[in-house]
View 1 (cartoon, rainbow, N blue to C red):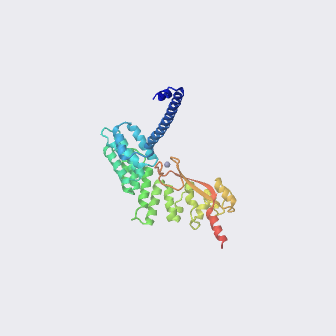
View 2 (cartoon, rainbow, N blue to C red; view 1 turned 60 degrees about the vertical axis):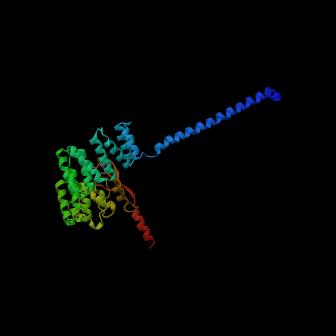
View 3 (spheres, protein in one colour; view 1 turned 120 degrees about the horizontal axis):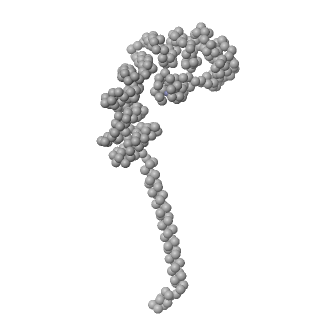
Length: 348
Ligand SMILES: [Zn+2]
């Protein structure tokens, strides 16, 4: 026992205890630091995980009912979901806002919901929403315009034409839509023969002089002879792509020889030799090349109202929903068809 006390009082023992304590403290603080760092990462992961997945319908209902965010914030969020193509979440938000008992801006939110249903392709639901808005607020031109679009997409042209009446009463410009819908109703009618359709479409054109591109696109397709008969050469540039694609056997050489634009266009295409130059760069280049290079024209379509560019022709712009706003633009490209036919010939 004495020996133990003697050793305990030994200064060397104190030094050893001192270093052991330092080691234990250092070791503990090192592990405590590691543990805290790991917990920090985990907390960040847990926090970020909440935003990686979209809130469920139940979560959305809970969040909106808590009223922690303003209605404007929810509308902005719904609009952003809709813009990114997530219509389902956008519709869920609008529906939940509408379910709240003390909601305001009911008409506006219903309008946004109807628009989102339309974008998502739920035409029947969209129709019901716009009809509900109009039942309570008949003088809402925005809802009438959207309802007209819904009917058009549902191919219910009769109802779409009926919507024009209240729009007209609200002093909205309906002339372009009216002609457009009449043509659509006519061309989609199964009871009218093709012959009667061409007669009626020409009557519409003579009366309105609107929707030129749409009318002549149909005429050049089904009856090129009649298309040339009623063709207004002053509008050649409006339908340059239609003219460019008319088959050689359907060309009206008399009409072509009487108009400089047509002479240049068909000389550039290589069907006639009636021009030596053109003020249109693409025509001029093709006239001077005289078929020595495999070049042709490529067409693009632009909406004159919103400047949206399309690779295909359109009758109603899908961006701004205006009709009769198509403008044709063209450029020179390599003629792949000619390349292909020459390649095929080389094997013969
Ligand atoms: Zn447009």
